[in-house]
Length: 113
Length: 115
Image (tube, rainbow over all chains, first blue to last red):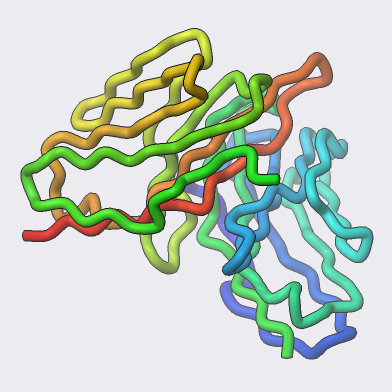
């Protein structure tokens, strides 16, 4: 158990809809990262937050957004969902914004039908 | 453009023998390389890392070797045990003046340890 929690575990929704994925980092970790794992692309970095502020951006679509709240939990919002957004979404946390050691949650499996 | 490549989707090794997992990269700006292990229905678990200024790092049964001139790293597991059966991801990080970016992952190698 990494100490990173993600909810929900599974999510099934229709195209065009909007969903919110939630992540709670390990106790004491200030930085949160979001990754998408799809069958053909592997694990792709989406976005990083550090102590409430956006720190780095990867291959995140404009339809996706994230935020980190004062209690350090984070939410990833996915809107106007398409079939291709079906994937595993992982959250990871680290002690600070520069740490290379990231601890991953169990993931949320999103299925868009 | 895949900056981190794991060319073997799967590898089968007998229990007790050495497992060698390989990874190639193209970005010279990577400053840290990491290996993660992943079981089904779980998130990746950090295994071992190596700084770009080193060529070897050891942790118990796991050793990572880095060859910067060849832009190649490998993970050695000795001896291989049944619990090592998992998907192994190679990952790398760029650290620029503005801070660290997210990790760049390879597509993984499925290691199967045969009894």
